[in-house]
Length: 195
Image (cartoon, rainbow, N blue to C red; front, side, top):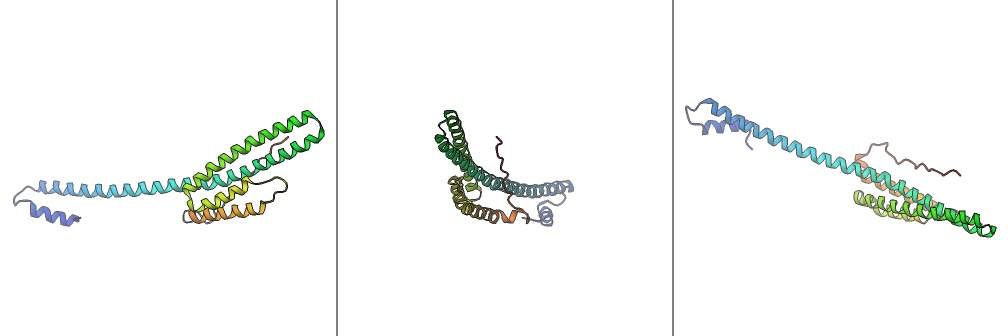
């Protein structure tokens, strides 16, 4: 591109002798305006790229937060269903139909909660897989541990916690350049129903 000095020199060559200075001034103004608009377009494109990057980062952070929380809810729902199943089997020995029906209803409710929690966790994993693909395999492994959790004894608790730590590390590596130094995952708050 021609600089402003080059444009003025070009105008001097193109402008016939004796032409009014107004034509040269208008032509110079048009060229200057064109250069300004080109610079504004470049700045606008750079701003749009930056906004897209920020939206992707925001979506990635949301997925990074939602997935572990959904996986933890799945663990607790699965363990709740396991506990309800144990209670139902123990209530058979009581020979009390009302107690058996109550535990049967609790088991059905726990199974429905488990189904919903697993579906939500699968959706959260799909979002994580799209936005942070480097963590997808470890996240699936962690989710599988959460789905296979048992209430008593919790046999895969250590492996589940290790898998969660690996997922958190992978996410921090993937998003590391865009995260503050002190950023970390919050431990989930578990709401326990009161009876």
